[in-house]
Image (cartoon, rainbow, N blue to C red; front, side, top):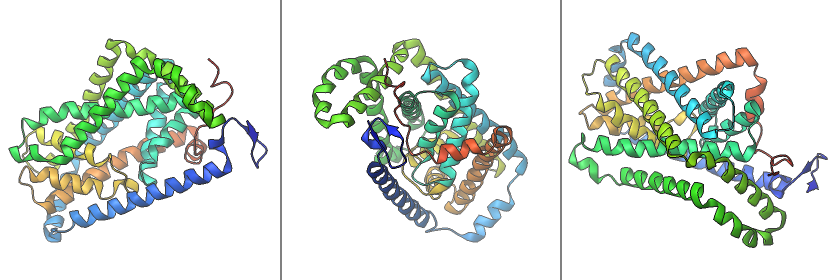
Length: 359
């Protein structure tokens, strides 16, 4: 424990000025990498675009179909917020609204900040809104995202049966399935056998002085917080809610296709959502610029939709999604003020307090 320049006592070196500077430098590098990825994807998506066809596709759009799509996207956000509350496991039911606010602020953060900074913002917001300890909020947030990844892997096998054989050769999809499948296995190992690792951890982290001690305490808190997930019934509920959220995403994507006057099977919406799930796992510029475009172009090619039409579709789907998120955020800011969002987006990392490391 030592005192910072601002005279405040902290418990570990990661909150020191030098480590905050390193954290900001790392964030800057990741942000620049995200912007470069988005720029490359935009260039790839615009390579074969006929702007006359793009404009014609937008003129054929039926706005009325976009309204139910927006409401369904709202429903998907609420389902994921409820799932996060269930994964967290320690908050009373009335705190669900705090999880929804945190989820919404995280989505807004991804709109205005690069490199998926909204994932950190929603963890900080949850700690502020619901009083969930920092390590618990972080571990539950990671597991919540892993639930989405595992649900996408399960749906990938469903979609494969409806796709052309060439699609099976896509290394990106195979890599995506292996990545989230491996993370799911590691999560199960952590939940079941993580306690045994914690016994051995002090001998490795003790040499790191207070940094190792702080990490061990955070690890133990995350492990204890995840123990309620050892019940198989809870895992079934989590995955069922994940599949329901993906069903809402699929419906919204398909309704947007209907708005363009396309007569595509419902499975096309699922395929497109899976492409988006893969693409949005990459670091990107704010608002997923380029991510939506390249995902929609490649997904809709499987259904003989031209690149120009697919680009128009991606822009409309992106606008519907973002307008829904911003409308949620506007309602929350109206009810609770802008201070909460400002605090969530200007807090670098949750600090470890003396109360949080007590077991």
